[in-house]
Length: 318
Image (cartoon, rainbow, N blue to C red):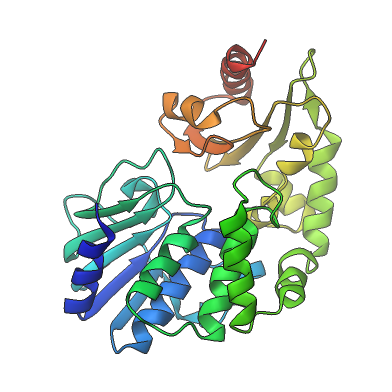
């Protein structure tokens, strides 16, 4: 879908609901806030709803308190904009047969996106924030320091502080532009990486104590049970980025995080470059990127681990 069609719809409509996926992270929150702030600055009426709360580590972002946590929506809007979400079901409170607007706009960079929108801007990009930035520029909206810090935070977290393979020249160019608009990189890094709670550190200790590796050393995994949050005084937010520890082990091709969630299991996959984990996740009804993907699965942990690890083993390069 051409971006021009989306720009035309945004220009002619007045009321917007902006939302993103469940368990939102840096790109989801940063992109949504940047777009909401930008549209509000040109007189649009914007509501920003999510199924889950803003992670504490992202609460420093401007106007993060405008994000309302909801389970249902009983209002009508001219348009709903879903950002950084590969499947409408992952929003949590929206259904395809009950969209509270005339039009549904889907803005995403996941290659497994289902194209669920009335209008879809789904294309390869470093982050959803890159697509949002394009829209803001094309609408002629000035980038304020508030918009810039949201975009910078989204891009920085989505690239693992510019360490992941999705980082390229355009990534640094965009980051440089955000700094030019007033972002202080040190300030953002302090909020994201240096504000760990004691609960998170205790949780990390429990998780890493049970880290395991396959016999061939190419698969590493960690397990997070819900009871661990109570034992350590932590929350599910504190699991963010934990998968990068098994991923960092020399020789590991794929890292797996088994996280208990309402008696089911949320599986996160990370690749070190030679395995397309998005294709694997699709087989289990999930999705994502070639280097980072995930899905939900039901069953006892032992059965789930055997099924997932056996499937990962079959994808490993010779």
